[in-house]
Image (cartoon, rainbow, N blue to C red; front, side):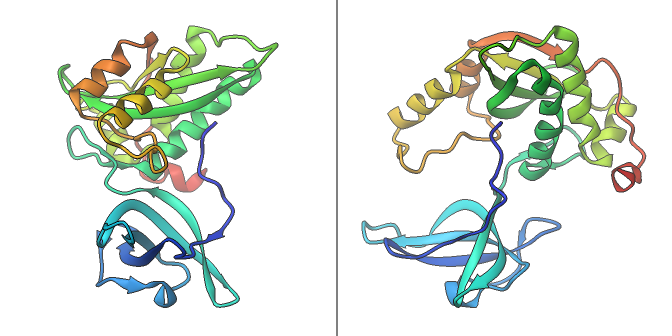
Length: 246
C-alpha cells in the first residue's frame, strides 16, 4: 500500500535554495509571506518553494510538509499531502489527505487476500446524474494470495465513503452525490501513466503519481486499463459527530 511515511526527515538545500509558504491547516490557504528554512515553526504546515542552480526561480513544488521538530537546529519535516488535490461534486470538498485516509481504511479489507494497493488516483464523473467520485486502484497480489471477490470491492467503496467528511456523506444521503466507484486497473497501468507524463516533459526524478486527474488523455488512458468496476451498495452515515466517535 502506498502511503506517506510517518518518519520525519530533514530538508537540506544542497542542490537548491528552499523557502516555504505557510499553509492554514484547516483550509489549505496561504497565511503569510515566504519563510526561510531557519524560520519555520514546529507544528505548522508549509508548501515547499525551491530556487535551483539550473534556472528555476521560486518554483512551487506543490508538496505540503509539517514541521515535526528540530534536530541540531535543523527542522525535521513530514510529508503531508500534495497541494490543491480536490474532489468536489456539489458543496463537498475532499482533499488529498482525506482521500488517502479513505484508501488506507478500505485497503484493510483486501489484506487478508494477500492483496495491496500499488497506486491510486481519482477524479469526479459529472456525466452521470448525480455526479460521483471515481477512484482508480492498481493492485498487487502476493504469491499465494488471491484476487478479492466483487463483494469485497463493493465493501471497499462504502468503507471509503464512511471516511469522507460529513458534507460528502450528507450529499450521498440526499442523493446529491452518487455512489462512489472504484475502477481496478490492470498491472502496470501507473507505469504507463508515468511514461506518458515523461513523454510530455515531466522529470523522471520529480515525477509522482497524481492523486487527482482531469486531463482527458490521462482519463482515457486509465479507463482503457480498467479490469473491473465496483460501486458502493449502500449510503454512508452522515452524522457530523461520527468521525469524532471512532
